[in-house]
Image 1: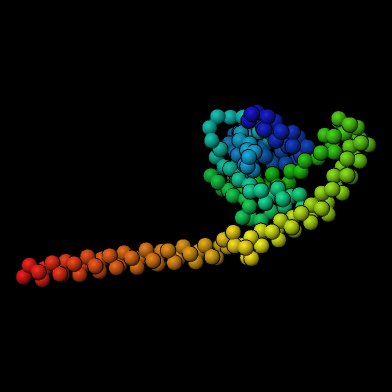
Image 2: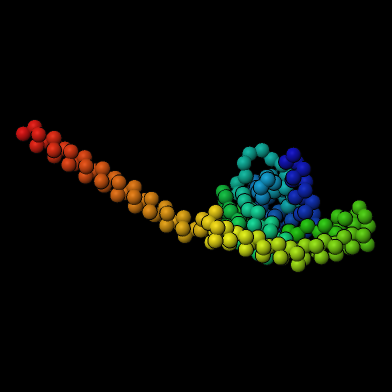
Length: 194
């Protein structure tokens, strides 16, 4: 299964020789790119391809689904949607290269159905995902805002931080109270003995 994922990633790299040359600078390094449920892990070859290898990745670029939605709507992804793990410098460089990769579906389709049919299908897809994709992205943003603000199913970051601080304060106050009670009990026991 990993061989198929690596082959698909290499197919994408094949459409971008400049980015493949950039990736070749990291020959011998093990990298991972994860967009659940898909993940690709491998070692970079001297030619800039990815090869299946044993062992874990030195650096992993973990992408949330917001990255895919941003890509479809033509927006830049939010920084919170991209997590760098392991060697963060390597992961950041891989992320910069991956961000430049765009699948040229028309080229692949032209091999199957011919150039004219591929161009027509591309025009149809642009019409389908162009303005509609942007509207869909905005609807998703509005829906998430609704879940956070009006129907609080999702917690806001500042609300979670405030709750955590309150829990920490309560824990500290409880510990002080327990120590004070233990001290008072010890005093009471000492006075009973006398």
